[in-house]
Length: 124
Image 1 (cartoon, one colour):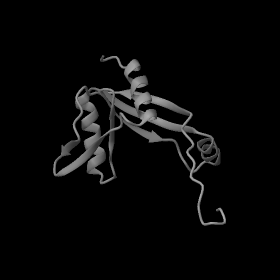
Image 2 (cartoon, helix red, strand yellow):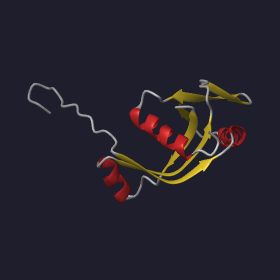
Image 3 (cartoon, one colour):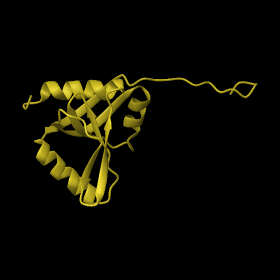
């Protein structure tokens, strides 16, 4: 902290995302799986960008190596489930529960992940 009480604010962009497994599903199957997660009561927020809906699962963050790599700008995702969804919708209802779908197009790393997933898609 500086003497006058000001703090330094910095930004450290993500440099790399490592994805160990990608699972492309039909949109119907993607939402069926998300419904199971929603029913479990676990917090759920889906991501959308570039016509792709996806849900990343981070690699175990309790590992010292993963923490060290994250601090250097590398994220590790164990799995990403995704589907082609050309039109953005802000919510998906699963029974009485509404799950938000966040348009991540303005977030550069989410947009780049969606573009990468789109290239891997067999349904485009």
